[in-house]
Amino acid sequence: MTVDQLKQQFQSAFNQQALETYFCPGRVNLIGEHIDYNGGLVMPCAINFGTWMLLAPNEDNVFRFRSVNFEDTYDIGVQDSYEKTGREWYNYPLGVLHHFVVDGKQVKGLDVLYFGNVPIGSGLSSSASIEIATAFAFNQYFKRGYSKLELVKMAKSVENNFIGLSSGIMDQFAVAFGEANKALMLNCDTLEYKAVDAYLGDNVLAVINTNKPRKLAESKYNERVEECAQALKALQQELNISYLCDIDSDTFSRHQHLITDEVVLKRAKHVVEENERVKLAADALAQHNLAEFGRLMYASHQSLQHDYEVSGVELDTAVEYSKTDSNVIGARMTGAGFGGCAIAIVKADAFETYSKNLIDYYTAKIGYAPSVYATNISSGVHELVN
Image 1 (cartoon, rainbow, N blue to C red):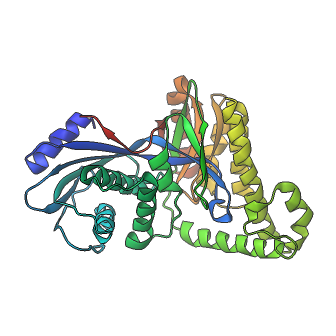
Image 2: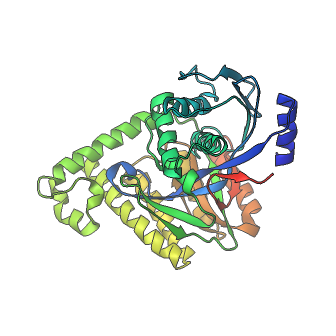
Image 3: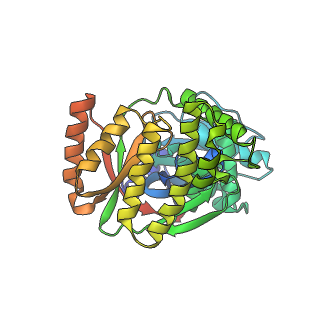
């Protein structure tokens, strides 16, 4: 849907013209999986799928939330605080509004229309996209003076405390601070980051949605967190460290005998080596060495498949096919795993063929089709000039 079409939708919904238009992308994590809670580095980037948000003031001092994607609507007056209501999509902007008023920021009624093309539940951060879009737009329109980092922390609080989901800060950070043709090498603990060149040349970033419901992800996620805690405790018998990612592979190999549980040992091995792969990946991208970056992507997936055991047959099948296609530079699962998405770097002029062949291969093995999208590494949240 084009911006002009969205403006027509806004006119139809509210009988007035949109005053301002904003866009916030979704994100993928290029490499560095399941190490954010181990003090390690992640490498997300913003993509050109995301959330568009149009707004205009009204004279009724009411917030009217509408979406092109959902029939549910919500109207509520300006109040001193707000509460989550059910599971509908509008709780995300409502949570942002709650933070503004609880912080003592003065607001006035707005008509607001959203449109998103991030596949819901795919692991591409549709929720962070709508949270940051709303926080950024309200901050700009009401001139409230929050820094971008403060908006990121606010959006994370919305996710954790208003919506009630225990997630880290990577998603909100990536969609806010993303830059075109750049990956963000981010320490989720300190929030220190470095924008790394991620120029894909004549390639596109393919996103493969397995279309598998992610029912196991939360319980298995918590299980992995606990296993890493066990590994850390064992290593702390001889090492003065706070996180598994405080050590390199050499140090780990010299002290791995302290971890007596074979499964816990495999989890720690993935964490330490994956953190090193992020650093190597940053070097490869800085040198425009996509072949080396692709090798690291495959190595990351193999570790997530065999050592961390969070991929599953659907994600493995997507990567398995990608390895056989000469137009693919590298591929891996991205996100928590157990469904969700994989990513691949694919020659742009071969994308359609790659997509068709992958869908055929996957469908024959899994029994239903994945969804395959071509994206680029794009900029973070911004206002669109009318």
